[in-house]
Length: 281
Image (cartoon, rainbow, N blue to C red; front, side, top):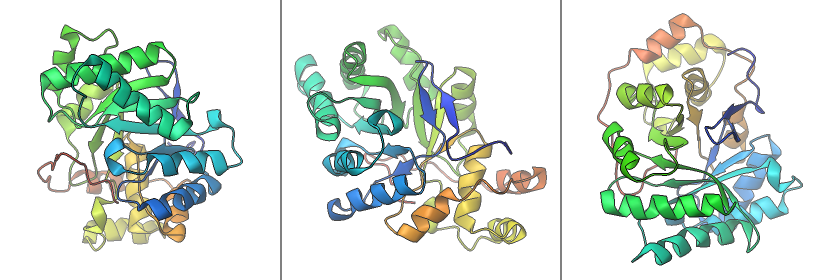
């Protein structure tokens, strides 16, 4: 893991590369989203994660346009929470995200089904719409979020593209979701970690604080680094320019075996999977 840099990527089953560090924009108000994304891109992030339900897809798209970077150098993800009334309406709903972010001739690097709560029939509608858009080149890769093993296995009944290329989950030392994470790793599904900073609820945890003090880093930096060393793609979020930069400054240290064991050994809490994930921190 010592060879990691802010430009490090992983390869999806689609053959595309996904940056290992992402920038989340859940709950980022529309008047700040573009500025925050531009700040993230300026300090080296190359991966932005949004969703239809966040209500800030156009602002993410504006940041991509305003940046001095080539479109192919920025990886953009969005998510669909629920299908339309039928196949055509669901396809159009997915396409709207492409247009809001990339314009009429644009594309998305990744689109996810936001979670499994709409049920099997709705998941099928959304997945097949995303498959069609992938075939057309309007979405490069497709995946899921907050899916368990059963949800992913059931997709085999109809999916032309299987397994999903990504499964985005709430992950941190207090919620490691080991069974689904192991399943994903064994099936070549990239695991993304939302809420890697635990909504700042563990900033004073003694074990986490001791690891941070040992390395001269913030607890947030330790948590992001921990995700990378677990082979997860973390998606920290902030609208504070200083914290945006700090959360990406995690490549000049490495957690040792003792650090990882200490963090791995935290008491596990119940997963909170709701209609809209709280990616805030």
